[in-house]
Each structure stands twice: as structure tokens, then as C-alpha cells.
Image 1 (cartoon, rainbow, N blue to C red):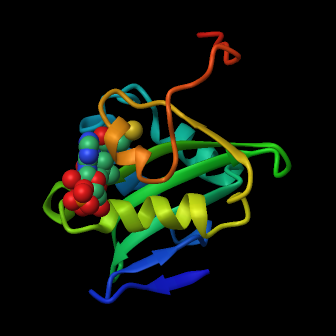
Image 2: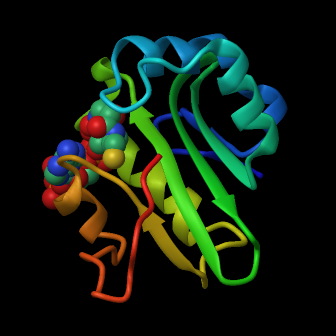
Length: 138
Ligand SMILES: CC(C)(COP(=O)(O)OP(=O)(O)OC[C@H]1O[C@@H](n2cnc3c(N)ncnc32)[C@H](O)[C@@H]1OP(=O)(O)O)[C@@H](O)C(=O)NCCC(=O)NCCS
């Protein structure tokens, strides 16, 4: 679904609109979590995602978020970013709100990883895990 923000920028969950080269460029150059990811892998992750939400300034991809879910119990939020020049004006908030609270996965249990975004994600109800959560790292 396409949502036009008051700024004229657009949120769109159509995976065909994703500029894979632009997402790959951010992830491989600027992110701290996916520098080794190839463009082919990014393409595959977009294709296999339960939902992707892109943030667009016209044709330009200025933000992205990816959701992986079984559609019933659990959803995982990944690869959230807004390009530097567009940060600090509420767009990251709208991007995550669209992915988490406005999509088909809103009533599920959500998980994410972050190095420093804890306060940001608290706004959407994310909190540190209970001692029931275990992780198996690669
Ligand atoms: C995290 C990110 C998506 C936020 O996007 P943004 O457009 O700057 O965020 P917003 O302007 O919507 O900010 C919303 C609120 O979250 C806060 N916030 C933003 N980034 C934050 C961070 N890293 N840690 C804590 N709070 C943060 C803002 O101060 C703002 O708070 P306020 O509403 O009380 O003023 C963006 O900074 C980004 O792309 N960072 C680099 C990639 C990254 O680290 N992604 C997250 C990986 S988990």
C-alpha cells in the first residue's frame, strides 16, 4: 500500500519498487551490520521478505525496512535505515510505524537486533527480552 506523507515523500510496500542497488549501497557502505552483503543477496532478501517498506523521494530510495514473518506468531524487523540527509525529521519513525503497526503483522510478537537504537524502538513497544529468549548465532 502506498502512503504519501505530508512532506510529499512516500512509503510504499511494493517490493517491485525497491531500488536494490540503492539499498545495497547503504547496507554495504554505511551500515554496521551488513557490510559484507552482496547485491545478489539483497535482491534475494527483498524477494523473500514477508514485507518490505521503502521510503521514497520521487524515484529516489531514501529509506528501507524489511520484515520476515511466519504470518501467525512472530515477525522480525531488519535493515531499517533512513539516508543521512533525511534523518531527524520523523521519517524513521513513520517508516518503522508503517512496518510494525500499520501492516498485516501488527498483532504478532516482534524481534529485532540493534546496537544503539534501543530508545528509538521503545517508541513502538520494543523492550529487552525476557530470559525465555535464546539466540543461536552463526
Ligand atoms: C535509526 C534511524 C532509522 C532513525 O531515523 P530518523 O528519521 O532519524 O528518526 P526520526 O527523525 O523519525 O526520530 C524519531 C525519534 O527517535 C529518536 N531517534 C532517532 N534515532 C535514534 C537512535 N539511533 N537512538 C535513539 N533515538 C533515536 C529521535 O530523536 C526521535 O525522537 P523524538 O521523537 O523524541 O524527537 C536513522 O537514524 C538511521 O538510518 N540510522 C542509521 C541506520 C541504523 O542505525 N538503523 C537502525 C539499525 S537497528
